[in-house]
Length: 173
Ligand SMILES: *[C@@H]1O[C@H](CO)[C@@H](O)[C@H](O)[C@H]1NC(C)=O
Ligand SMILES: *[C@@H]1O[C@H](CO)[C@@H](O)[C@H](O)[C@H]1NC(C)=O
Picture 1 (cartoon, rainbow, N blue to C red):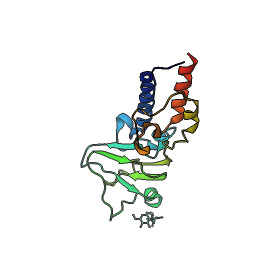
Picture 2: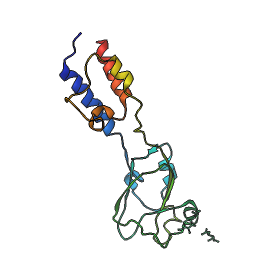
Picture 3: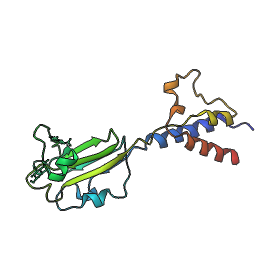
Picture 4: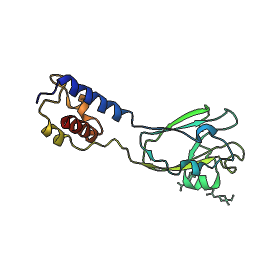
């Protein structure tokens, strides 16, 4: 059975695309945005936040801002004097470490009125298992170019199991 090389490359490209788009963007509060009298813990519950995902705080500038604080300051609605808050009205925070993160609005009593959020960030989803099982089932070379460096190969991509699944489906036809 000789599978057309182009077909294999299309499958690889599809798999690569589906893995590189796995980082999520969360608009905090969805259509409500970042405001008072909204239950941000209810909003966060059931959502899975991973390293690499983004939080986007949308609000009217001047009337709101965003501070990342620690748990103590969160509980007390204390705005850290030393730290500079975010103020653009469209603040994008990349979740770069796992663990609990706390955010609040530092304007007037808005934190006390519910404008605060904590989330638990899970490790990155982009941790790849080894590709060797895949290479051993394929009757062709996986390299689309003559001599790819290991770091530039698309097969270093994050979820080779997806690749495996697609290729297995292909072979079953
Ligand atoms: C938290 O707030 C309470 C009451 O306002 C205050 O007594 C306490 O010192 C604060 N704690 C911290 C760590 O800021
Ligand atoms: C929390 O942050 C404040 C500064 O805003 C700092 O004074 C305090 O020691 C921190 N608390 C902990 C438990 O890290």
